[in-house]
Image 1: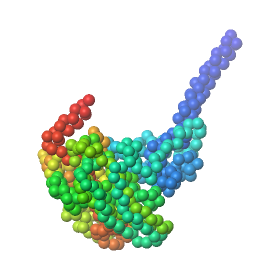
Image 2: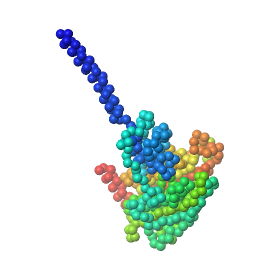
Image 3: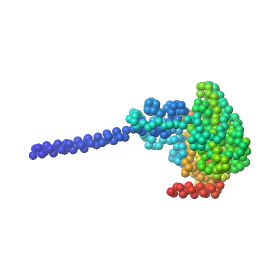
Length: 449
């Protein structure tokens, strides 16, 4: 009887051990399975969203390719991703269109993974889990060449020498295109000729100058010259932007005798550099004419144009402008442009029936990053003739703005970084009312599939 009692007690004790220990073992195993490491979890995120800039011989100040390169920056990485300063993607995620072709932002899950890794001491993990290095294109070559072959036409600006120490300079040479017949453009690239030249080129614009009566004020009423003989903007290079491919069956028209008006903003960095800008143009085959014509315009956010900006010391400023679409079209992108006092810019569409739609709101504008938000094909807004695009911009000339070089100065329009301006680069693909209705029907059918 005593032996039976002893056995019962022993079995009870064993059961208690199983009840207490087994969950702990399972918990430990689960924790081991969910440990976040650099090689297994963080490196793939860095490859996808960060290494385009953060690698050797690129524009970022440090490389984040290997664990040894990334580990010293772990706490800084944690802070930058939590505050969504990096990767640079400053659009408000709570309103407007959220589907983009070039979305570089981190998902909530990716941010949580990086935070968990840093909080755990930034462990390296098993080297066997490390993904193979990502192969990046040669930035000195043309990015669209793999798709279209080399550019059909390359237009080069004259060389410009930037001394080691100098004031900012704006160089605006005019270069003939050499075209003797009309040609339709399906893709455009622009970049400084050398990777080193990117260090001194703040931005580069290429305006197309040609006599084109069909465009003069016909489709959109802007405060600058969107078309016609004075030359609408053709392409822009800035950090994070190098070119664009037109949608299938759409393009830009270049005419015989046209010229490219370059505009380069150069700034010294402590070493002398000589460079130029190259514009690569890819044509549709001769005889192939796209159905839709696309135009890139600078939609002013200030009524009457940027020259009306006048911001008092230690004050804020809000401006709005309303631009009517005189022809139906599809808005392909949104790229705000302001300077150091710029804080935010939004684009809304006021439809002919009075309905207002928020298209995009960049609520954390950062002058260091000229991000072009390119809408996904099925998200790009189709707008009828008579729609009004409302562009609103906010400026902060107070000491609360950490980018403000001097809150005690009056600020007006100017090309210098310490001056201000306000516009949005917008690509619009124009179409007839009949084609507009067809595109709307296609979009509706696709959304119901």
